[in-house]
Length: 140
Image 1: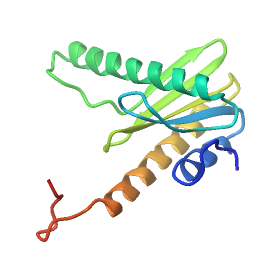
Image 2: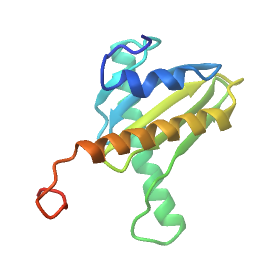
Image 3: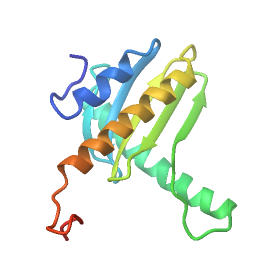
């Protein structure tokens, strides 16, 4: 297993690491707490990545809304390109995010596809596990 955490995060993160040139991935909450991370990162690095990723997402949501002159924007993904490689971040509908880092040779299309596939799987699992009221709606 390539993930530091077992169970919940391993099934999400390990398939992302199968993409050639992907070096690390983090599963985090929207408010910047680490839920799991891959072995290429130390705990403190994973925590730093999660906190920064959360902040970047907030800034990107605000920027998207400002550019569109809208009160709010729903973020689908953030892609950052640097001389060291690419960071791709995709939020889920239920408050978590998947962030992955690949070196400059990574195929960004494959990375994006895999990250979004895992985000969709996370969403399916959350919907299947969410408690439901007698009328089928969510419990409040």
